[in-house]
Amino acid sequence: MRRKPGAPAGKRHPAPGGRLPGDPAPCAAVARMIRVDQAGEYGAARIYDGHLAVLGRRPVGETIREMRAQEARHLETFDRLVADRRVRPTALAPLWHVAGFALGAATALLGERAAMACTVAVEEAIDAHYARQAGSLGADEAPLRRTIEAFRADERAHRDTGLAHGAEGAPGYRAMHAVVGSATRLAIRLSERY
Image (cartoon, rainbow, N blue to C red; front, side, top):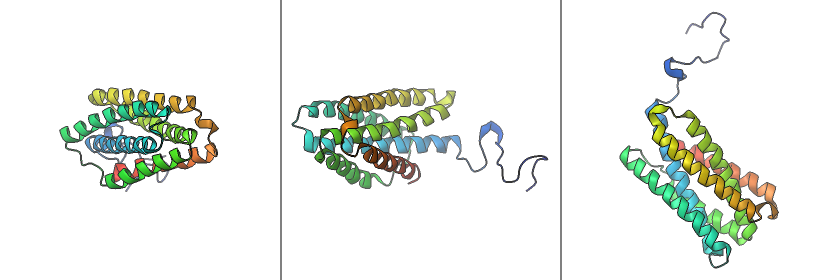
């Protein structure tokens, strides 16, 4: 394979349309977005289910139920997109079913502030994820971009709710934030592929 004169060895050059060799075709990239977003909204709903199993009867339960209801609306939207666009859902849904609930319940057992710390960490990772997705969508996917941006605003509001409910006062907040955020980013990468 010949290099362009003056081009550094090993550097990839964009193909026509701004794609790099090996990048997925636009329709495949959008399918990955829809797959991972459906998986993420399902996982988020399960985290809130875990929170509610422990904290549902406390005053904070109403706040958690409101956030859970928004996640359910997001999930319904991505369920429709999966069906309409014939996107293969993630094969990891059974894992997210168990792991999401377990994460929600475990953090809630540590107290309301820990549950809210979990919310902050997850929603910050999702906010960054949605920002990248929205920025990569062209005019041909404007409706999907608007949907993602609207859901991103909801996720930021959930993060703000967590902060307002004392998330940063949870014991081990920084460590919990780092671990939960890293786990969320890993779940995103896995759900895009599998």
